[in-house]
Image (cartoon, rainbow, N blue to C red):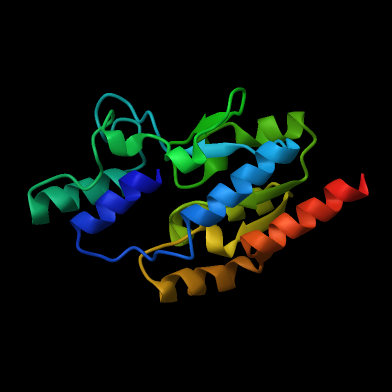
Length: 194
């Protein structure tokens, strides 16, 4: 979740790349989804289990081990911490699906592929907090499953602007990289054409 990631990054004294990237772009796309009922699904890293590490991949639990060893405290907030809640700007409306993922990519642990296939979805729009982790992994997983992929460059972020842009450059191989406004414009033209 954006709140938990922000807290974790601050704990290790790193600067999370901020506006105009990240939450505002995701919120704009979520609003478009609600307005035209485009059927986009949200994936949130929530409900990880009673004990941190029991339901998370090694790379995530190892971050906590590093935090304990170097800072004396966990980097990943405990399950139930307020930081795991969906940000108010992104809170789903009634009937909107929320997928819980326990991996870097959404397809690996959230049954996303089957949900999309059941709806005859052919394209996915990818947003998230960590461009180099969750966004990149989900985009690659989607491309591997033959979905058309659009990564929204200003609706994701990571530790530094350089790392963010370097990862966006690699994602052109798997689909398109566009801004939130570009995605919204294309979606509006498609809706008007119907």
